[in-house]
Length: 330
Image 1 (cartoon, rainbow, N blue to C red):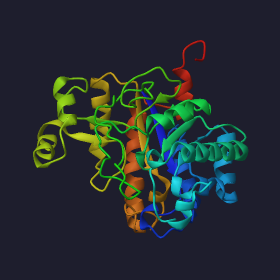
Image 2 (image 1 turned 180 degrees about the vertical axis):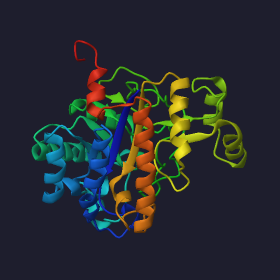
Image 3 (image 1 turned 120 degrees about the vertical axis):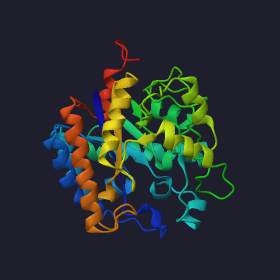
């Protein structure tokens, strides 16, 4: 089983809405990097503009990348990435999703971020994640044109329609019908396989119920249901959806349940995600205190130890995507 670790390397506490962007949390990453290395894993850091613009952060991440201990990708937060429109300058606190941008603004921000990442780390980024999971087909097309090889923005089983940045927005994407396996998404509908050049590697979100199969009619119909009390009850009793990330209710047994579900469904890759801000006390709602950070590290240690013992092979996002390319590279 391949194991990809993705880290959204971004500013401190993006959710406080004060329009500021400090990156103190990046100074806390060496402990996380050491933990990954101790277990033979190489994380992929998906970097926002404010992080790449900070010299100390850039030097630290670049050192790991040059040593082959980590990989650098891109993470687009439109509200902090130049160039800014007049509307963005007037309302700097609005946290727009990439899919809410007009096509010209989306293209310009992606070009800006890609060029600065390439110059900073002396290698073009291979992997990408849209801020607030706001991926659409236009973004996939732009990523292909800019030379990206992988995206990891599609969260199967989840609907982000209630998530919006701009007023009167239709909301974020609905990924409930997306595959859990890597695929090349269509630019017309990113939840369907197509013929693009960018491999979608979804964060691992599986049904861990013992008798549930991911491609079954029951699983597909259940995923398509609106979120309500009955769906939550059925999930708790039967489907048992689990996301391979640390949440307030995460327990060590969740990691084993996810791994076993992946084996039952013959998946070849698992993808874990975490925000860099969650590794600093006060950097995230998940980690308000030093004690909460220690809880996170306890869960991380159990996760890495368990997956390593089961034979999981660590691989960065871009490297995995390259391994899936056809022989002719197209």
